[in-house]
Image 1 (cartoon, rainbow, N blue to C red):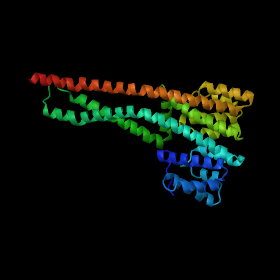
Image 2 (image 1 turned 60 degrees about the vertical axis):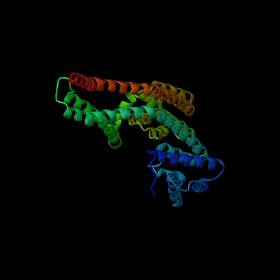
Image 3 (image 1 turned 180 degrees about the vertical axis):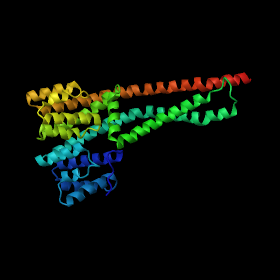
Image 4 (image 1 turned 90 degrees about the vertical axis):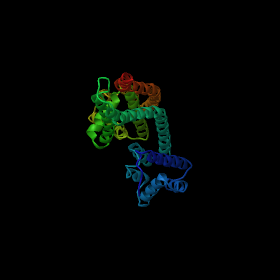
Length: 343
């Protein structure tokens, strides 16, 4: 049975559709096995149908729903598996599914808004890079063949530098994307660089902390110990530098250090997080504090994403404009001077 990984769009969509269906059906009073049967009749083909069939196959072998989900690590994120295990243990699986459904819908809305806003600037940048490569590699060398070398003609060195520079830029971006998936050390460095970027880094960090705080609020609210919930919640974070900082906080807490002090000792984590955790420790209401932090970082993600998308288009257009000016000054103005001298 092939399951599409949620790292791709279809995989995420399948998990979201299954969660929405199960949340609705369990809220109506159906058990998980019956809800899966009804869901199977609703989705007869496609990734969601294959996902349901794989879960039902595991349950038919005698395992629980949370165990079946836990065995499918490539399809369900860590937060999903942890919350289902806690919900099944406490008898509140329908509440957990409802919270997961709401969380997945919110993440999809943010992701969709960001992708839509960045699509046009990204296409403009891509077309500009491809155009520079085509002009540098195909058009200008042909002109060099037809035109004798002169003081006014564009130099071969300039042509080579521009084409090599564009090619290196594209290759570096592709190599970074591939190595991030396959080499943890490179992934750690890339993730740290992303967090350090102005404006974009703040949006990424807020998104990671929103996911972490949501997991903490849900897990602690379901009765899990704070330190154990911290270790589980750290696994839901995709940025390796942030995940390692949260894991170090969990290790410090297990050694007896106060949770707020452990968070304060991690430079990558904002001080606000430590201050609010200290409030939760003093009042004994850690769950409510993390719920408030979830709402705060959710708003921060939306605000920062709006800033990024607002500034992305003029920034990319400015970069493309500078590139066009460089092309004109380096190649076409000398060519015009050569042609004017030939007249």
